[in-house]
Amino acid sequence: MARATVNGVDLSYEDVGRGGMPLVLVHGHPFDRTMWAPQVAAIGRPAQRVIAPDLRGYGESSVVPGVVTLDVFARDIAALLDHLEIGAVAIAGLSMGGQIAMEFCRLFPQRVRGLVLAATFPRAETAEGKRDRRAMADRLVREGMEGHAREVLPRMVAPRNIAALPAVADRVLRMMQSAHPEGAAAALRGRAERPPYEDVLAGLDVPALIVVGDEDAFTTRAEADRMHSLLRRSELVWMEGVGHMPNLEREAEFNAALEGLLARLTPPS
Image 1 (cartoon, helix red, strand yellow):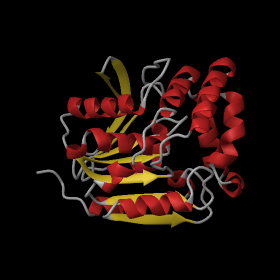
Image 2: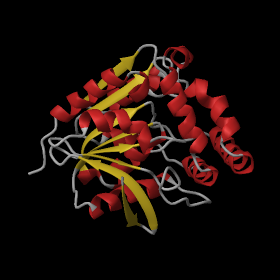
Image 3: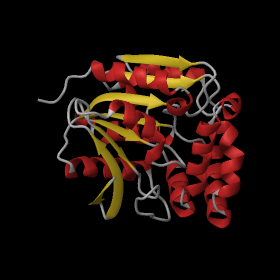
Image 4: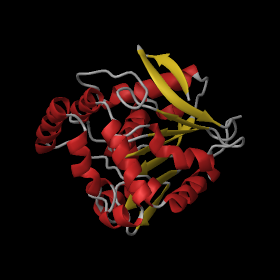
């Protein structure tokens, strides 16, 4: 683990390997960089560089209360890459991390050489969704993460996999329980303000990968197909018996798909 000060906050991150097109892994909410541990271990190696940061407010990075919008997260990632003297990257994100990756593509399209969107969607937040996220943010600050983590676990991991993969379920639960309430709340408030990203995806001309589970409580098949149609050079991997955490629930299949995308990219000169 390393640390860097960027945009006025301290970010913790993993930086493994030195070759290939650098791959940035952006975690979801309310998780941290350790959700990508299986991918860092399997893909990060001398011939492939992988960077997995803790977003501000999460993991071992600085906690910033209030409101943190997706563009702030995306600019933090760009500043971290500047700190590491990295230009172009492939960027992968899951759930909120996928929306941060889309925001990164909106702000820094010249830096994107590949895109992975897992268990996410490009539509803007609805009026009802804004109210729900703000109310949940207030609850997390008031009550902490414990109750919410246990309530939402069956929506994060497919119920069948909670029983079949207890170590995965326990990992996901512990990450949610350990998230800082103020950091998680700030991200929820910011995510309520997210714009639509359909036009961003339609404007990209890079290899892309979309991974969605058929038991995902948040991303539908229609949304997966929509992203696939917008991203002209994309592959869609539809995983049966998988919930909102395909990188953990179906680790080997997810890693193989990710390796396949990386093989399509031209390493920086």
